[in-house]
Length: 96
Image 1 (cartoon, one colour):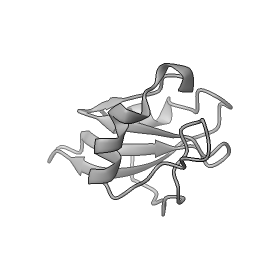
Image 2: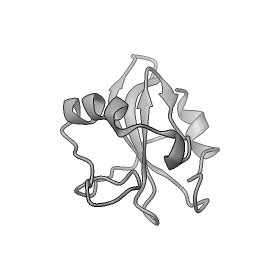
Image 3: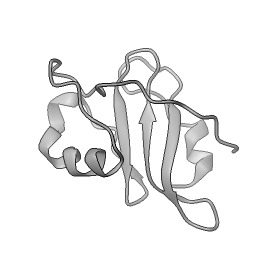
Image 4: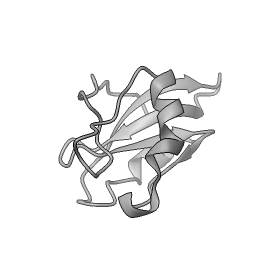
């Protein structure tokens, strides 16, 4: 995913700006794996193979996302139906 795309993305639920945490990127700063997080509604959207997964909750399957989340050291909030993390991310601002 090109970092310039970050300026154009917003939360698909409340239209808030998203924060990003990168777990793997190429030498030319293309994001391969990471997570986008909405600070307002606390939903997360994974970036897998360079593709941000921004689909609504009803069309996502937690079982498909759990392996990536575990690899990144993150857990889902199992008490909620929506896609929120157990603990908030320690966000960092990335240069664009």
